Length: 203
Image (cartoon, rainbow, N blue to C red):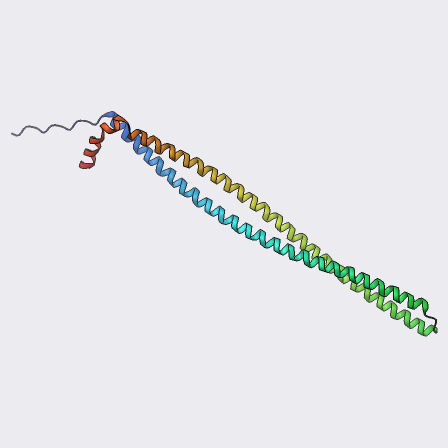
């Protein structure tokens, strides 16, 4: 009969503990790397949102600038119309005062002047209505620009918080990497290297 084969020595408890800690550290590092990837994706999405908000802000500013230019032109037009109408009214009043003809001719001139005044008043009313419409559009555009600026500020705050979380996660990962490197440099880790080699050989 052949002699019984010797039983393999039981693994050292310290080796088992170190191996378990190493496996836990590796799993923790994998989770941290997943969190890092998720945080980086979140940062990219926030950057894309900021770019869209910046584009909306630029478009709103452009629209506001155009509306302000149009409103300024309309106001200048109203001022010129008022000046011209005042000159017309003054001229008509002078003509009315200087009219010394017959009553029929005077009545006809007065009627003509009244019609011209009515037409001038209607034109002024139309211009004032247009000015009110442009002022209302300008106020709406400014409100939209304010909302866009508020959304941009909120997005930038979210980005700053995400970047801060990413920095904390990166620091934690670096600390774990240093801890694993220090553990691998210890004497017990080097002494248990043959056991790990045998385990890989028979696994």
